Amino acid sequence: MTDPFAFEYPSPLAGYEGLEPLPVELNEDGKSIKNPQHGILSKAYEEFPDPLAKDRQGGFDVHIYHFQNNPSQVAYARALYERVRREFPELRIYRFWEGPLGPHPIAMFEVNLFTPAQFGAFIPWLIINRGPLSALLHPNTNEEEDERNHTQRATWLGDKIPLDLSLFKLKKQAEKKDKQNESAL
Image (cartoon, rainbow, N blue to C red; front, side, top):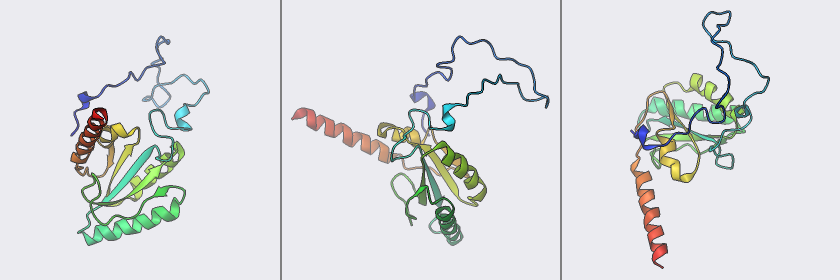
């Protein structure tokens, strides 16, 4: 588990300082609060907010896991993989992995989401159709934040599967060593 206090968090109200207090009046349902309407939708409906990737990497990765030694999970995962490819051909879908890969300790397949519309369509669909499988949904920002994106910023559908985070630490150590070697030249 990543320490949530190891990171800095910008204020959620940045850019909204000094505004009048919001009303506390209830809607007709007696439960929800009336929000003042200003007729402008959030930009988040059209593009992912910074610092999410808006390039070839995509804003979000979805890793859909199955236990490779469980024949019924393998069969379900293969069927889901085919359905995803048929129903969402516009998404980038990677190959069906038969075993662990990178920080992922069991077999999986990966789907990239590039727009809020793709996210809004695929994630609710996956929630309903993932069956017995677990899925990791993580943002893509910059490479230096891979570990944070896979941990503190990640969300799970189904049971959380512990990732092998040592790979991120080894990568950082190798990068540090490369920098030291470059500065020694």
